[in-house]
Length: 280
Image 1 (spheres, rainbow, N blue to C red):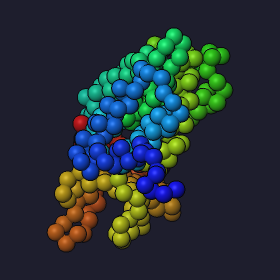
Image 2 (cartoon, helix red, strand yellow):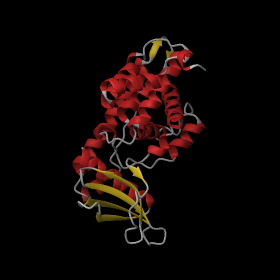
Image 3 (cartoon, rainbow, N blue to C red):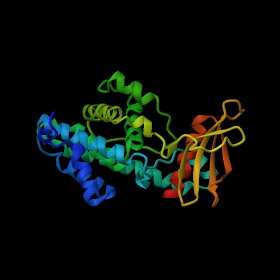
Protein backbone atom coordinates (compact mmCIF):
# COMPACT_ATOMS: atom_id res chain seq x y z
CA UNK A 1 0.00 0.00 0.00
CA UNK A 2 1.23 3.49 -0.83
CA UNK A 3 2.36 5.20 2.40
CA UNK A 4 0.40 8.31 1.40
CA UNK A 5 -2.81 6.28 1.37
CA UNK A 6 -2.03 4.28 4.51
CA UNK A 7 -4.63 4.99 7.20
CA UNK A 8 -3.53 6.70 10.41
CA UNK A 9 -2.88 4.00 13.01
CA UNK A 10 -2.68 3.62 16.75
CA UNK A 11 1.07 3.16 16.39
CA UNK A 12 1.25 6.52 14.59
CA UNK A 13 -0.79 8.18 17.33
CA UNK A 14 1.53 7.01 20.09
CA UNK A 15 4.67 7.78 18.09
CA UNK A 16 3.53 11.29 17.17
CA UNK A 17 2.67 12.08 20.78
CA UNK A 18 6.00 10.65 21.95
CA UNK A 19 7.85 12.85 19.45
CA UNK A 20 5.83 15.94 20.37
CA UNK A 21 5.61 15.56 24.14
CA UNK A 22 8.06 12.85 25.19
CA UNK A 23 7.45 9.21 26.08
CA UNK A 24 6.09 9.78 29.60
CA UNK A 25 3.54 12.34 28.44
CA UNK A 26 2.61 10.16 25.45
CA UNK A 27 1.72 7.31 27.80
CA UNK A 28 -0.61 9.61 29.75
CA UNK A 29 -2.23 10.88 26.54
CA UNK A 30 -2.73 7.36 25.18
CA UNK A 31 -4.07 6.08 28.50
CA UNK A 32 -6.54 8.96 28.64
CA UNK A 33 -7.58 8.17 25.07
CA UNK A 34 -8.48 4.62 26.09
CA UNK A 35 -10.32 5.80 29.20
CA UNK A 36 -12.38 8.33 27.23
CA UNK A 37 -13.42 5.70 24.71
CA UNK A 38 -14.84 3.20 27.19
CA UNK A 39 -18.41 4.51 27.22
CA UNK A 40 -19.31 4.64 23.56
CA UNK A 41 -19.85 2.16 20.77
CA UNK A 42 -16.94 1.56 18.39
CA UNK A 43 -16.47 0.36 14.85
CA UNK A 44 -14.02 -2.45 14.07
CA UNK A 45 -11.51 0.15 12.84
CA UNK A 46 -11.75 2.12 16.08
CA UNK A 47 -11.23 -1.01 18.19
CA UNK A 48 -8.21 -1.94 16.08
CA UNK A 49 -6.86 1.60 16.52
CA UNK A 50 -7.10 1.18 20.32
CA UNK A 51 -5.39 -2.22 20.21
CA UNK A 52 -2.50 -0.74 18.25
CA UNK A 53 -2.15 2.13 20.72
CA UNK A 54 -2.11 -0.31 23.62
CA UNK A 55 0.50 -2.63 22.12
CA UNK A 56 2.75 0.20 20.92
CA UNK A 57 2.55 1.94 24.29
CA UNK A 58 3.23 -1.25 26.23
CA UNK A 59 6.19 -2.23 24.06
CA UNK A 60 7.67 1.25 24.50
CA UNK A 61 7.44 1.21 28.30
CA UNK A 62 7.42 -2.43 29.45
CA UNK A 63 11.10 -2.43 30.49
CA UNK A 64 10.89 0.96 32.18
CA UNK A 65 10.70 1.03 35.97
CA UNK A 66 7.28 2.40 36.92
CA UNK A 67 6.87 2.08 40.72
CA UNK A 68 3.09 1.70 40.54
CA UNK A 69 3.52 -1.39 38.32
CA UNK A 70 6.08 -3.18 40.48
CA UNK A 71 4.71 -6.11 42.49
CA UNK A 72 6.17 -7.26 45.82
CA UNK A 73 6.34 -11.10 45.67
CA UNK A 74 6.44 -12.16 49.33
CA UNK A 75 3.88 -12.91 52.01
CA UNK A 76 3.86 -11.29 55.43
CA UNK A 77 6.17 -13.72 57.23
CA UNK A 78 8.92 -13.44 54.62
CA UNK A 79 8.48 -9.67 54.49
CA UNK A 80 8.79 -9.55 58.28
CA UNK A 81 11.97 -11.65 58.16
CA UNK A 82 13.39 -9.21 55.60
CA UNK A 83 12.23 -6.15 57.58
CA UNK A 84 10.00 -5.18 54.66
CA UNK A 85 6.51 -5.30 56.21
CA UNK A 86 5.80 -1.75 55.02
CA UNK A 87 6.41 -2.96 51.45
CA UNK A 88 4.09 -5.91 52.02
CA UNK A 89 1.29 -3.59 53.22
CA UNK A 90 1.85 -1.09 50.41
CA UNK A 91 1.71 -3.86 47.81
CA UNK A 92 -1.51 -5.18 49.36
CA UNK A 93 -3.03 -1.71 49.07
CA UNK A 94 -1.94 -1.50 45.44
CA UNK A 95 -3.57 -4.88 44.73
CA UNK A 96 -6.80 -3.65 46.33
CA UNK A 97 -6.65 -0.48 44.23
CA UNK A 98 -6.17 -2.59 41.10
CA UNK A 99 -9.24 -4.69 41.99
CA UNK A 100 -11.29 -1.50 42.40
CA UNK A 101 -10.00 -0.24 39.05
CA UNK A 102 -11.09 -3.46 37.35
CA UNK A 103 -14.60 -3.17 38.82
CA UNK A 104 -14.83 0.51 37.87
CA UNK A 105 -13.55 -0.09 34.33
CA UNK A 106 -16.03 -2.92 33.79
CA UNK A 107 -18.87 -0.64 34.91
CA UNK A 108 -17.61 2.26 32.77
CA UNK A 109 -17.36 0.04 29.70
CA UNK A 110 -21.14 -0.50 29.60
CA UNK A 111 -22.13 1.75 26.69
CA UNK A 112 -25.76 0.55 26.60
CA UNK A 113 -27.80 -1.97 28.56
CA UNK A 114 -26.00 -5.33 28.69
CA UNK A 115 -23.35 -4.24 26.16
CA UNK A 116 -19.76 -3.83 27.40
CA UNK A 117 -16.40 -2.90 25.88
CA UNK A 118 -14.39 -5.23 28.12
CA UNK A 119 -11.37 -5.30 25.82
CA UNK A 120 -10.98 -1.53 26.19
CA UNK A 121 -11.62 -1.86 29.90
CA UNK A 122 -8.79 -4.41 30.16
CA UNK A 123 -6.46 -2.14 28.17
CA UNK A 124 -7.21 0.79 30.43
CA UNK A 125 -6.56 -1.09 33.68
CA UNK A 126 -3.41 -2.79 32.39
CA UNK A 127 -2.01 0.57 31.30
CA UNK A 128 -2.44 1.83 34.85
CA UNK A 129 -1.44 -1.23 36.89
CA UNK A 130 0.61 -3.48 34.61
CA UNK A 131 0.07 -7.05 33.46
CA UNK A 132 1.58 -8.74 36.52
CA UNK A 133 -0.75 -7.12 39.05
CA UNK A 134 -3.87 -7.35 36.86
CA UNK A 135 -3.20 -11.01 36.10
CA UNK A 136 -2.65 -11.65 39.80
CA UNK A 137 -5.93 -10.02 40.85
CA UNK A 138 -7.89 -11.91 38.20
CA UNK A 139 -6.22 -15.27 38.82
CA UNK A 140 -6.68 -15.01 42.60
CA UNK A 141 -10.38 -14.22 42.20
CA UNK A 142 -10.93 -17.11 39.78
CA UNK A 143 -8.92 -19.53 41.94
CA UNK A 144 -11.10 -18.75 44.94
CA UNK A 145 -14.24 -19.26 42.82
CA UNK A 146 -13.19 -22.61 41.36
CA UNK A 147 -16.64 -23.97 42.19
CA UNK A 148 -18.40 -21.37 40.04
CA UNK A 149 -19.48 -22.81 36.70
CA UNK A 150 -19.66 -19.35 35.15
CA UNK A 151 -15.86 -19.34 34.88
CA UNK A 152 -14.52 -21.35 31.94
CA UNK A 153 -12.28 -24.38 32.29
CA UNK A 154 -9.65 -22.47 30.29
CA UNK A 155 -9.56 -19.55 32.72
CA UNK A 156 -9.62 -21.86 35.75
CA UNK A 157 -6.66 -23.76 34.34
CA UNK A 158 -4.82 -20.48 33.71
CA UNK A 159 -5.54 -19.26 37.25
CA UNK A 160 -4.24 -22.47 38.87
CA UNK A 161 -0.73 -21.72 37.57
CA UNK A 162 -0.39 -18.79 39.98
CA UNK A 163 0.95 -19.19 43.52
CA UNK A 164 0.00 -16.33 45.81
CA UNK A 165 1.46 -15.01 49.05
CA UNK A 166 -0.93 -14.94 51.98
CA UNK A 167 -3.66 -12.29 52.11
CA UNK A 168 -2.18 -10.02 49.45
CA UNK A 169 -5.10 -10.01 47.03
CA UNK A 170 -8.80 -9.32 47.30
CA UNK A 171 -12.00 -10.33 45.52
CA UNK A 172 -13.69 -8.46 42.70
CA UNK A 173 -17.29 -7.26 43.01
CA UNK A 174 -18.25 -7.47 39.33
CA UNK A 175 -20.57 -10.14 37.94
CA UNK A 176 -18.82 -13.46 37.26
CA UNK A 177 -19.65 -13.45 33.54
CA UNK A 178 -18.11 -10.01 33.14
CA UNK A 179 -14.98 -11.00 35.09
CA UNK A 180 -14.72 -14.13 32.93
CA UNK A 181 -14.77 -12.06 29.74
CA UNK A 182 -12.45 -9.41 31.18
CA UNK A 183 -9.91 -12.11 32.12
CA UNK A 184 -10.13 -13.64 28.64
CA UNK A 185 -9.42 -10.27 27.03
CA UNK A 186 -6.54 -9.59 29.43
CA UNK A 187 -4.90 -12.89 28.44
CA UNK A 188 -5.37 -12.15 24.73
CA UNK A 189 -3.77 -8.73 25.21
CA UNK A 190 -0.85 -10.36 27.01
CA UNK A 191 -0.33 -12.69 24.07
CA UNK A 192 -0.80 -9.91 21.50
CA UNK A 193 1.75 -7.67 23.20
CA UNK A 194 4.19 -10.56 23.57
CA UNK A 195 4.46 -9.40 27.17
CA UNK A 196 6.11 -12.62 28.38
CA UNK A 197 9.37 -11.22 27.02
CA UNK A 198 8.97 -8.28 29.41
CA UNK A 199 8.23 -10.44 32.45
CA UNK A 200 11.40 -9.17 34.15
CA UNK A 201 12.56 -5.57 33.96
CA UNK A 202 16.07 -4.83 32.77
CA UNK A 203 18.42 -5.97 30.03
CA UNK A 204 18.83 -9.57 28.95
CA UNK A 205 22.25 -11.18 28.69
CA UNK A 206 25.59 -10.43 30.28
CA UNK A 207 26.38 -7.31 28.20
CA UNK A 208 29.93 -8.52 27.65
CA UNK A 209 30.69 -9.19 31.33
CA UNK A 210 32.84 -12.16 32.29
CA UNK A 211 31.24 -14.96 34.33
CA UNK A 212 31.20 -14.27 38.08
CA UNK A 213 32.27 -17.34 40.11
CA UNK A 214 31.00 -19.48 37.24
CA UNK A 215 27.67 -17.64 37.01
CA UNK A 216 26.59 -15.96 33.77
CA UNK A 217 24.64 -12.71 34.16
CA UNK A 218 21.28 -13.22 32.42
CA UNK A 219 19.37 -10.09 33.53
CA UNK A 220 20.44 -6.75 34.98
CA UNK A 221 19.03 -3.33 35.72
CA UNK A 222 20.59 -0.10 37.01
CA UNK A 223 18.95 1.82 39.85
CA UNK A 224 21.55 4.61 39.95
CA UNK A 225 24.44 5.79 37.79
CA UNK A 226 26.72 3.04 39.08
CA UNK A 227 24.56 0.52 40.97
CA UNK A 228 22.08 -2.13 40.02
CA UNK A 229 20.63 -5.61 40.51
CA UNK A 230 21.34 -8.74 38.48
CA UNK A 231 20.22 -12.34 38.09
CA UNK A 232 22.87 -14.92 37.18
CA UNK A 233 22.82 -18.62 36.31
CA UNK A 234 25.25 -21.47 36.80
CA UNK A 235 23.66 -24.83 35.85
CA UNK A 236 26.43 -26.74 37.64
CA UNK A 237 26.07 -25.02 41.01
CA UNK A 238 24.10 -26.43 43.97
CA UNK A 239 22.05 -23.22 43.85
CA UNK A 240 21.88 -22.60 40.09
CA UNK A 241 20.47 -19.06 40.29
CA UNK A 242 21.46 -15.97 42.24
CA UNK A 243 20.24 -12.39 42.57
CA UNK A 244 23.07 -9.91 43.27
CA UNK A 245 23.41 -6.22 43.84
CA UNK A 246 26.36 -4.75 41.97
CA UNK A 247 28.43 -1.56 41.74
CA UNK A 248 30.23 -0.32 38.63
CA UNK A 249 33.59 1.43 39.11
CA UNK A 250 35.05 4.20 36.93
CA UNK A 251 36.63 1.61 34.62
CA UNK A 252 33.32 -0.16 34.02
CA UNK A 253 34.19 -3.16 36.21
CA UNK A 254 31.31 -4.65 38.19
CA UNK A 255 31.55 -5.78 41.79
CA UNK A 256 28.77 -8.24 42.71
CA UNK A 257 27.68 -8.76 46.33
CA UNK A 258 24.68 -9.44 48.65
CA UNK A 259 23.72 -12.54 46.71
CA UNK A 260 20.49 -14.42 47.31
CA UNK A 261 20.94 -17.99 46.02
CA UNK A 262 18.39 -20.65 45.13
CA UNK A 263 16.30 -21.88 42.23
CA UNK A 264 15.08 -19.68 39.37
CA UNK A 265 11.88 -18.56 41.13
CA UNK A 266 13.81 -17.61 44.28
CA UNK A 267 16.13 -15.40 42.23
CA UNK A 268 13.23 -13.83 40.35
CA UNK A 269 11.36 -13.12 43.58
CA UNK A 270 14.46 -11.59 45.16
CA UNK A 271 15.04 -9.43 42.08
CA UNK A 272 11.42 -8.21 42.03
CA UNK A 273 11.40 -7.59 45.78
CA UNK A 274 14.60 -5.56 45.60
CA UNK A 275 13.18 -3.47 42.77
CA UNK A 276 9.95 -2.86 44.69
CA UNK A 277 11.79 -1.84 47.85
CA UNK A 278 14.22 0.39 45.95
CA UNK A 279 11.65 2.26 43.84
CA UNK A 280 8.72 2.55 46.26
